[in-house]
Image (tube, rainbow over all chains, first blue to last red; front, side, top):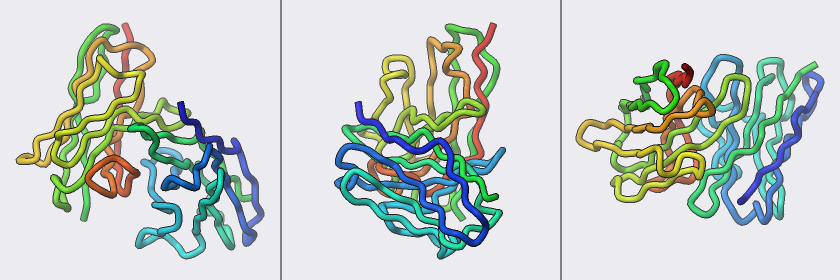
Amino acid sequence: SYDLTQPPSVSVSPGQTANITCSGDNLGEKYAFWYQQKPGQSPVVVIYQNTTRPSGIPERFSGSNSGNTATLTISGTQAMDEADYYCQAWDSSTVIFGGGTKLTVL
Amino acid sequence: EVQLLESGGALVQPGGSLRLSCAASGFTFSNFAINWVRQTPGKGLGWVSGISGSGGITYYADSVKGRFIISRDNSKNTLYLQMSSLRAEDTAIYYCAKDVQWAPRGFDYWGQGTLVTVSS
């Protein structure tokens, strides 16, 4: 089965850049999606199809996907960005989620 | 405005059955795949099942294959998940999630979720 691996946690200072990675075999050949989930809320897509930012998502969120790694980058991280982030891809008729990364803004 | 409203979650005994519904609005329902995704409180997201826009193609996670059936009624803009032979490990919040295209790829809108608890 196909697996996506994320670091369990990432810490960043306010105003700095946070990079959250998602690794999988030849992930760059697939479309990667990123979701943000805050406590008690449903997930919200912040990046879809590798690099597209939905309307309403701040410009500080960006994505890339190449080789075996997709990366969610949050530039100028704000306290409101503290949340769990999940990557997701589609492989062999199956939707796969990464295990999630807890972003802490210190 | 896209809206997805799940219902049907309940407390059910192991081995029991339950049907979840997801009422959709704000988009052309038949043009998009819809999926069920679950989350055990405090844990990560797990995909359960997806169905193509026409309803003609269905997809399942191995953990639910043979026990759950996904379906949709495009005339009612409603998605369903018939769950049977329920196990304790099926306990979770179940979300419906709209896909970005006619077949499962990834999700641009999520519902608020409905809680399923499997316990005696």
